[in-house]
Length: 144
Image 1 (spheres, rainbow, N blue to C red):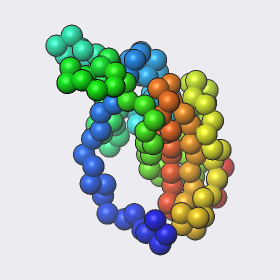
Image 2 (image 1 turned 45 degrees about the horizontal axis):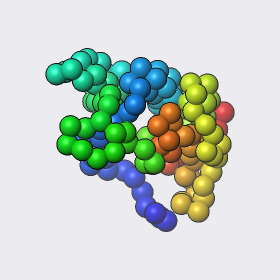
Image 3 (image 1 turned 90 degrees about the vertical axis):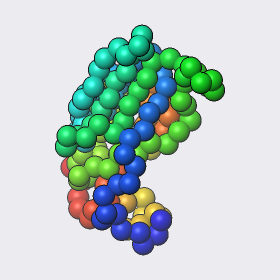
Image 4 (image 1 turned 180 degrees about the vertical axis):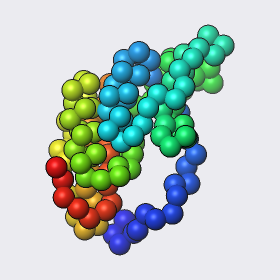
């Protein structure tokens, strides 16, 4: 990652994660992602399965599905590292505070991680399923 600039749009369209408690997940991510400009964009039951989507700027890119996949595998998605880009360092700080207040566990306070690159400012929290979630800003600036 050293020296990498992130100026092109993301190439991932969306991602989906299985959860054990969709209401708990919805509450956690609604709070944690709000400082990043995210909101609940989809919340419905489809063919008996509750699905919640989050996004910003007219796009839904993060989906949570209640319960195990009918195709097998683990019943929930856990142990992943998910990172959302923040517009500024203040949003990273606010994400961390909101995620902790919503029941997340601290996994790295907001701060520079210059070993990635000189302006990498991130914060890490463990979500209710055990995933390491992060907000990151790649721009120079001051935190609030």
